[in-house]
Length: 241
Image (cartoon, rainbow, N blue to C red; front, top):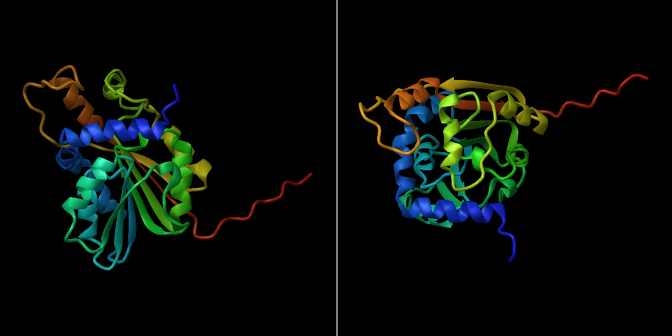
């Protein structure tokens, strides 16, 4: 039996998510941690922006309103997510959606001023290769912004590994930062963004044991890693013998 490629597994899983309506629910779930990120990014009105793992496209539409002279590209491995995202943005002229994986972004080098990814990077088959691709498509001086809830420093999400239907990567903030530095980024930093969403008195979902664990998870916050592509590549300094 032929081996199924990692991106094909991702496509099938997130197509199921799309059919279950999760693409639409992502806005409610992610907006509390995304809004502070957008404020920090300082997106300019003429910026070219890429959203990696855009899902149903809510963040692409949000960013489009901030770049009236710019352009936003939403990319996702799920063709069903992209189909739904396109239908939701038919009236937006500065928006485009494509099916694709972060390991082979379908754009030329130096195409974007900003790249953002929300709750996507721990699903990437090869995070280091994905970060190198993001570096390639960013313009010199451009910045990358990766926001995730599943990371090693937040103990209250570790149990998710038993629920995921596809392989994931549980890395620490320092490990993610190391991948960015290895790819050539400078000014690499990471911090937490707490989720202020009120916690219900009773929790009945599958991701946490109870409401107290959900509240603790939100207090720990999401991990935001951000970095800049150097404006001019620094020359390699020769070692003295």
